[in-house]
Length: 152
Image 1 (tube, rainbow, N blue to C red):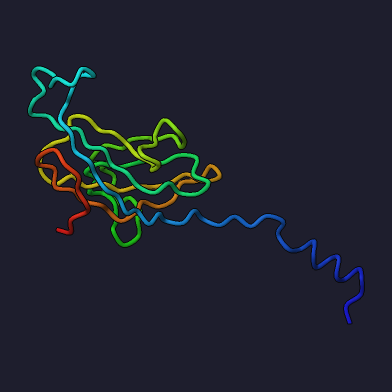
Image 2 (cartoon, helix red, strand yellow):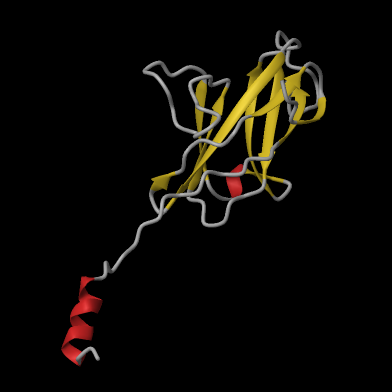
């Protein structure tokens, strides 16, 4: 039988706060590709060859923000950790909330995307801590339309 004092002491020895790592996001995205238009609906002169990619995913509960890495090859698909000293691709910081929502989903709009395969990884920030990067989502950007992930 444990005395009251012994029980109290055992409770005090238990850590008061347990911090769990932020789970790696299960990134399932879709992409919409558009040409560069003025608000008037006319193509922007000199940018007819450029495409705008809108990447959308389901918002993650309690997310403070996201980072979307475009064409990054330095991320391990197995672990989501960055490898090596060289960072390739471009990382887009994305605040959580209304400004980065498209049709009820979290999104990022990227003008000037190259034609061909465009690869994206996502990570999420919760309670001030970043998750590991997600597995990639890959879209073959060739012309305007809606696209789902393509395995290579």
